[in-house]
Image 1 (cartoon, rainbow, N blue to C red):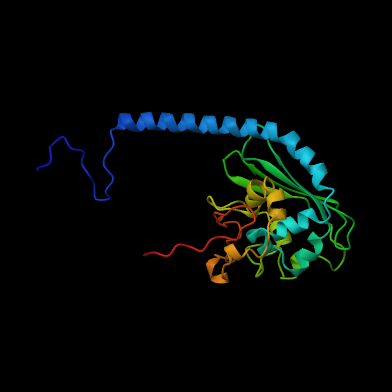
Image 2: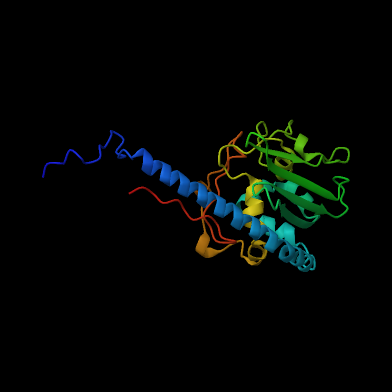
Length: 245
């Protein structure tokens, strides 16, 4: 059957032309959807804060809770080099505080017991959007004891120049989030912190979730702030990538 002259024209890319009025209507729908999502996020933050505070006191009763929890997530485990892991054993509390109005802004609080590596008992890494809408980050300067600064062992404290993935190199980095990549901070705030007890209880060597190193997209130099979050259930290893048929 011959096509009607009124049929929508299909350009080379295969996407039909859409009436400008329809586009405007859809733009309005998307804006309203974004407003609702922001409202829900704000309410969620307000309602969950006292719950997380109560949970915080309960988790403090479990020895080595946070060191073990971080070690059981496939991404944070990559960052815990031998030196990092030794320091993380002194981690007594991890808490994420989200801004109640600016839904994209949050702080990660790390509390440490007295240790032989640095003087600080609290370290804070903050993520926020600047006036231009770009993600920015800043963190507490670490007061390392002499000869204990593990971020200098590679010759640089910059993630871009470091050969190794390191938790404390990430912490001290001032790099901003690139594109929509999953920075380690986002993994901690959106995966590990809300599901901390699930990760803590999970088995590290789950036979149902075995995987090979080749199944992980390890970040290259300069891409540590561009990690892609795997789709996984709490405590699981990432599933093997689907092969093209």
